[in-house]
Image (tube, rainbow, N blue to C red):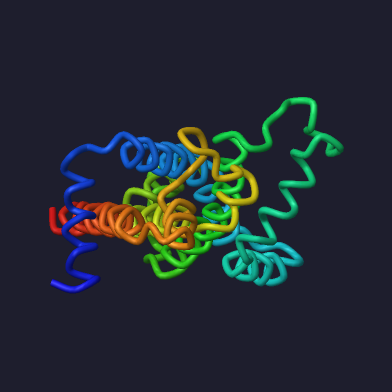
Length: 228
């Protein structure tokens, strides 16, 4: 079958034999990414709404900064948070470095600008009469904002999916803040990089298949919600 064919067969066997190391690596990836994408929208959605609905001096500068943060390299985030969480850093006594929580913090920093920016775009493209109509009918500013979110819910869902895709596939933050510790902080992406460099191509391929499957299922779920 050749090298690629044999590797693919071995990878599929690893997946369906429920290899423990594969399971632990997949679980770590899904746990950290899912936790981060629960926290990031709680920060990003209000930021996006505020920038879209408010008018203040420096607003365009804030939006430009948000756009810049979307393209921030993961290794830069890892570097900054490494200094924050290291023993000499201000949060060093908490012992967060090389733990899943350090990875989650980095992934939240990665996902929040994406969610905020896409929510900002969704609000900007929505009918501006939604807020005015809600206020006219006696709603408070908060209630009017909630009504607007209901109207743009698919845009909000898309922002969350995009944020999840960003964090589940990143390498820099997971490597620098997690340390790629076996059965603790090793994610699918860091394991793929490590095992492939060691010559364990089949193991890396197995994780690559799982990673692509997760991405496919998440996007299929979004499409089903949009169709409903």
